[in-house]
Image (cartoon, rainbow, N blue to C red):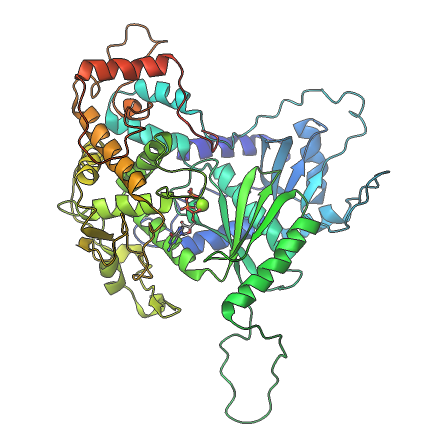
Length: 556
Ligand code: GTP
Ligand code: MG
């Protein structure tokens, strides 16, 4: 991916209007020992970058050079790229915030004849070009950055061309991970929303969390946002012991939850009524975590806005940390998530399915159980924490080390291929009926309650993150783990196929695990009768030939 970023940066420098050197990608420049930047530092840098950026609908198909020349009259352009969703768009990052202000000052409010505009000004703009108005189909020749996930059938073909399962896992991860441009777009959409919320709370920030920033995001994943009001000055200021002081008069609600609901209600209304590009706004205020859900049309992102959700931010930080500790973590998480989605273990809809978050915790737990362990337990990360890392949220201890260099890893040399095989073996035979999973302890524990699947919430240990999962969904997961474990042991499937015809590659290794499964309808945990290997492989191959695409949405 670094190579991709480099190519992208070279292209940016290549234009004559780009005066300033674009910033280097964040992953390789570290301000902390151990080669990793904390998620917090990364967020601050990205937010600042987003605040200097604008999003422009370029439907008028103006030539790239002409557009950049026009824009750069307001200031130096540090970086830009084009992408297509419902239209052609450009993300343009200026060197300074003043440049954006200057650009906006010159923009005009549309004066439609039938419709009237809500005069809310934002950094989402449309480029009009009177010169090309007569030929709207003119091609402008911009190179577009893809923002959606690669089709699964193409992925299966590409994986089958790789020489080893390790390479297949790496290739899958590189294909699906968020690109530099997609990450920029995510932060920009948060920044645009921040402009709406800042109308009421000027000191607030909107931060992305979840898979947009935890290192496990796949192109096309939703954008989880968090309205952070903790930065408002005046909280937790000690009352003076003597003398005069002033206190704000504030509206009181019945509980902290009610405050969150009220704020989200109003913000949801504003997004709906005033937010350019925001459609299908839903206020889901009675959920355990109240949220506002909407589509941001220009980016194509499905957005979930929450408030006062600091534990989720902490778990995002924790997943990010684990993902940065060893490259095998991300490889395995991407692979297992992709496998689970193609096999219908996870779903885009809420229900009794295992969620991506639960699945990620399962992978982490498995990696803690290796011998020697590949990643440390959460208790160990807490023990390494310094005084500045201390964090208690609503009575829950969320403390863990932020300085990556304090973490000593053990020398486990297992390959990704071995780990994938072992993962399926591990969960194909796990005692789910008696045991729960705890990444805090790195050990299975006696189940405190009788739900089918019990995965301890890392920061609220009395909660089960997979409480929603029913028996039949767990049984499908186990059956599919057994099937995949079995497939990876078959000589027909675990070696590259001899390639007689380079256009017609036969699926092997990881690619076979992504083909439609035979256990899709199995919903009991009885051991299924196994067909002879050759028959099963044949039917798997047939299913690929028939272009039987696995049931998936999410742009796969
Ligand atoms: P995808 O959106 O599926 O790609 O993954 P995600 O990790 O973003 O999951 P999701 O959007 O469902 O949730 C966003 C974040 O909220 C997660 O990364 C977690 O930090 C947190 N989260 C989600 N589900 C749970 C849960 O059941 N318990 C807890 N404690 N946190 C959760
Ligand atoms: Mg998400």
